[in-house]
Length: 380
Ligand SMILES: Cc1cc2nc3c(=O)[nH]c(=O)nc-3n(C[C@H](O)[C@H](O)[C@H](O)COP(=O)(O)OP(=O)(O)OC[C@H]3O[C@@H](n4cnc5c(N)ncnc54)[C@H](O)[C@@H]3O)c2cc1C
Image (cartoon, rainbow, N blue to C red):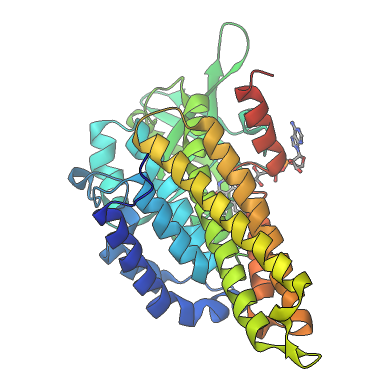
């Protein structure tokens, strides 16, 4: 067994780390405070090829692998959860379904500009009454002549305001057994009838753009159906399996940042005449944080590696997402505790880590849903 990264993976990590430290870190507080989507940072990330890491060069990608992509998400997440979430969603949700399921024409037309970072993509699955039960979608697509007419509503869609390509799921018919057929449709940004709301006010990941999408008689040509018209349900399950690796990587980034800040502070802060890192109660917190970050990272990299090897990774990506997101929340909480009152102040950043980490226990399948996925994989 080889736990070493390849030369390319090391290079990607270093390049993203340098970019994150130099360009994103100095902006992280203002991105959170102003709830400001950093469009200019995404333009630069596009030029560096970060939006296309896991896609082949023939579709505008960098020809990297899932492990490299996970390392990139971790590095960005370590400095800014908002940028990390929008990055993970752009690649895993906006672009990946087009790569997995798109026709050659769809890949050329829609995936290539996304992978080059010239545009951003979004994935609209969740609705006001269909969250964990995403198969319960109420959005409808009706075939009229050569085009589908789509009506419905999607909520909490990441990057929607800045996306040029939005893929949405909708019921497109009924099976013989009466169950709904779900299909996915590619909707270009300026399609009449698609309205994107102002961003929601959020607790954390505040600089990640999140909007509602209203679809009123939105017409798209038949060719805009993504892959198998009957396969929308399976498509989104597979897309979410992959997306979970990136949410887990983002969680590792936040957990590592929490540990780094807490350790540095503990060595510096003196009470009772000595650094608080001399107290065993603080040491034990730091030990647990360090161990959990490393375990979470190992699970992320294992699930990414399995995906790269084209082996089954459904259970492992659920393990990674569940464990890493809960680790991030615990680590951020402990980092605040180690900082005492200072930790409660915005300036010290650890309170932002906690607010950002909370989202990771909810988005792309809540912790409860991850436990359900794992139980199903166990044969329950
Ligand atoms: C900031 C943000 C960004 C997002 N970005 C996107 C995006 O880009 N695209 C997109 O499609 N969606 C997105 N979402 C939506 C997200 O995926 C959903 O919020 C999530 O899947 C949970 O759905 P829900 O909020 O409707 O909760 P619900 O499904 O209503 O769940 C409520 C509670 O019930 C629990 N629960 C539900 N069913 C079960 C069950 N069977 N067993 C046990 N417990 C259960 C849940 O775990 C949860 O605790 C985003 C959400 C947020 C907050």
